Length: 179
Image: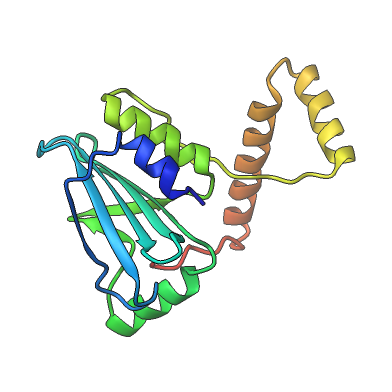
């Protein structure tokens, strides 16, 4: 999970507002800081953290230019957040009108997207995932990628996309919960 230090450096220590976090899922010391560039068609970033031990619960990046919203939720607290959202009958998936959060699981993915949003640059909208493959499978994939004259990353992306399509076709694909 992204640290307070990484988030503060990402936003150049520019805080535009802050408040106690209004939900109970992250505990009594949860606080929220926002960094907004002041433009309706701009961007903002949010961090929710613990004021006592600095645990980061959630980070968000809001790209108002392209109507995209990204977030990372600390996996240790995700169930509590979902449970409270269900109890409150609120969709935590919705960022703002007709824009849902895209949940990220790789720190570098969030950081790269946030830096590009802040700089007003185009960025890759695909989502990075961590894969821990056994050495023998990794070697086979690398050799196959070499045969096809593509990168290992491209080969794995193609393989994953193919698997998703196969699962969809067989009706085995489970839609993500509304968070």
